[in-house]
Structure formats: C-alpha cells, structure tokens
Image: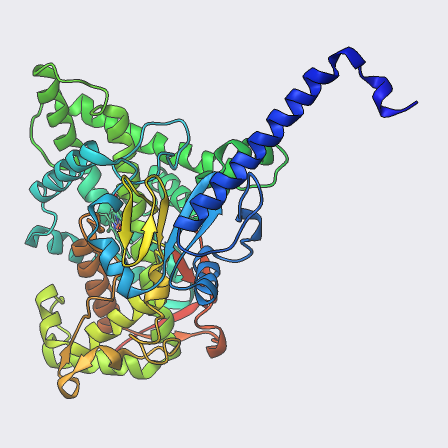
Length: 501
Ligand code: HEM
C-alpha cells in the first residue's frame, strides 16, 4: 500500500492548494523574519517558537555579556515571541537612559493574571502612580530627617543581634532592613519574632530566589503552565511565595481601611493611597486604574524592592570587609576622626569620610545587585547610536556589563575602592557610569533611602564590631547567586566581636 492510497484522489487538487498555501506562508514568515532581523542589531539566530531561550545556560547577565563580546555592545536575539535588544556598553546605555520611547515595561506582569503594580505599568498611568507614590512617601518622611531618625532607631535595635560567632548575616539583617520599608508602607516596624513579619520576610526571600530574569515567565508565559505541571520550573514556588506575601500585605490594607474610617491622619503609604482613592471616588473618577488591588500590588513591590536589594548590597559589603580587614581599619580610622564612639553616625558624616564612600561605591559596582535592570519595552521605533530598535522590542540594560567595562574600570575584576578616590585620597568621586540604581526618568525611586541605609548600617556595624570570617576563600569572593538580586555565593558565617576603641 502506497502513501497515496490513504488519500481520496478526488481531493488531491485541494490538498495541493493547501500545501502550496502553507509553503507560501512559511516562506513569507521566513522572509519577514529575515527582513526584521536585518533591521535589528546583529545577534544570533534562534529556534522557531522558543528563539534563543534554550541556549541560555548561565545567569542572563553573564550570558549576555559573552554574546556582546561576539556580536558587539548592542545586539539582538529572539527570546520566545519577543525581539530583545541588549545594551552592554556605557556609550549606548547613556543614550538609552535619555530615550523617552524606552520608558515602558513589557506587557506581561510579574504575577500573571493580576493587575500591574506601578513597577510594571507603562505610559500615563505609570507616570501618575509613580508621581503619587513618591508624593505620599515624601509626605510621610521619605528623604527627610525623619527618615534618618527612623533608620538609626532600627539599626540600634538590630546591632545587638549581631554579636557572637557563626552569624548568618543575611538572616539577621534582612528582617531589620525590611522593618524600615515597613515603617513607610504600614506605619510601623515589627518585632523580629512577630509571626506575620516572619511570614512576610521569609516569603520575600523565597520569591527573590525563585524569580529569574530570563525565565519563561517573561518570554513564554503560556509554556510555563505545561512545564510547571511536569515540575520543570520554579513557578509554583514563586506563585505560593507571592500569595503568602500578598495575604500579609492585604491584612495591612484591611486594617488601614478599618482604621481610616475614624481617622484621616496620613501616617504611611497605605493611608495616603486610601485617601487619594476616596478623593477620586467622590469625584466619580474611573476606578479601573486606581483601586485597592493596585494598592496591594504597589505595596508588595515597594516592600520587596526595598528590602531585597539593600540586604544583598550589605551582604557584599560584609564579605569584602571580612575578607580584607585593612578596609575595616581604614573605615574605622575615619569613624575615629569624624564620629567617634559616643554618638550615632549621621548621613552628613559621609562628606568627611571619603574612603568609606569609595568603599561603598566599589561594593555597588562589583555587587551590581540588579544586574540586568528591569525589562523595558520600546513604545515606538527608535535609534540608539547607529542601532535600530523596533517598536515593541524588549530592551535589556545590562548594568553588570557597564560595571565591568574595561575602558571605564581598569582591571574590572579587582575589588579596589581607590578607583573612586581623587585628590590624594581626600575626596570620593561617583562617576556617571556607576549606575546600580539605573538612571533617567525611570530610575530607582528608592535610591536616596538605599544610600542612607547603606552608609548608616555599614558605619554603625564597624563602629561597634570587628568582623572576622569563620573561614573565607579569597578565590571565590566574586561568585554570585542570582534571583531577583545578585548576592555573594560564598558569604561565610561571620564573627562580630565587640570593638573596644
Ligand atoms: C541598593 C538598593 C537598590 C538598588 C541597587 C535598586 C536598583 C533598582 C533598579 C536598577 C531599578 C530599575 C530601574 C529601571 O527600570 O531603570 C529599580 C527600580 C525600582 N526600585 Fe530600586 N533599588 C534599590 C533600592 C530600592 C528601595 C529601597 C526601594 C523602595 C523604596 C526601591 C524601589 C524601586 C521601585 C518601586 C522600582 C520601580 C520603579 C518604576 O518602575 O518606576 N528600590 N531599582
């Protein structure tokens, strides 16, 4: 029996037409794809449907950095259904930061199926939420002296918990850092043993480890369900973690709704948002883009962004201090000269502590905790230098590559605070290409809070303790684990020994 016997011969012309049509469609799609590729920056070809996703065999920032060495500092690749343009050098990144058509985020959300938080929004609605969120936070003390007082109070509660041997620094510092952002969002810090706080903090950790940038979540959301069913992705862990975080945040929102019925005082972000929501309701404005679901999501991203990043940066700092005791001594010399051992440090002390600032800049450069920025989307065709970026392309700013660019940072793998010192070491200088917080109109809104926290935590710890590693392997200092933020892979247990001046 031949293959033709399976077909009704009378339907052959129809079959031939169908095959011809399919062939034409395929050729057309190949030609369109070639034309599209020719306009895009150079880059590797991928497979149909999945694109280059299956070939990403390392942390995305390292993988992109390697591709940049082969295809150039601005290159493109197909990931799932998306054209992705990756920018890996300062010359082009500074143009991208200033480009108004690269301010949007991709259309998919971190939490599939839910309303977007302002971190995930684009266009006017993002602008409005960002402006309002920062306005409320400023009203409740963000960026003012009240913020410094709050941080100092929290640090004084945290410091005694460090004393001793075999300390897991991340486990100790994360709940303390989280308390600071909690004060702005929920109006209060919590006791470290509060069960709701523990639920929140441990699940933020869980989600941070489970979320990976170049994951299917971002580029092939439909495939994730199939793979999750077979246990191939960490998506279920991620979903459970988010649900646990949001149930605590929702409780804070519910408590505020009940409380705000009697009191109109604005103590924190939730109060401010609820008041604005009420104002809009009275004016009869559309509830679609300004409602309590978005409040829950905004508070969630503020909480996660405000605790994970700072915890990770501090943990890089502790590792370099533990590995290089001479840096502890240099910072302590500045503490002795400028602050002494009787009073708490304040943020203006930094102006007289150049080495301390240079150390913190170097920690941020080498740590690059948000290594690939948060994804952007082109809202119109645009050009970055000579490179064309088409409307709807996803754009990645590889901050890690900028922080390793040989032209800007000689011997970039070497940890060396001196690169930020000028005038014989009497001044610290922050160059524009140190961009841990990104830059431009969509930069990190938490930068000022982060800078104050990084300075006050580091100086307060060194004012009280000598840090010693239990055991440290200097060859492994630069290795990292990468979830939502890059962290040292080999931060050893530490000894915090009370320091006697
Ligand atoms: C060392 C600490 C931190 C680092 C390195 C960091 C870094 C970043 C980066 C690279 C972005 C992406 C910006 C872009 O798309 O261009 C970002 C966005 C963001 N960060 Fe931070 N961040 C830090 C601390 C904080 C803190 C303390 C908060 C909370 C107050 C915060 C809240 C946010 C929010 C809400 C966004 C999204 C902004 C938007 O989409 O408009 N971050 N951060």
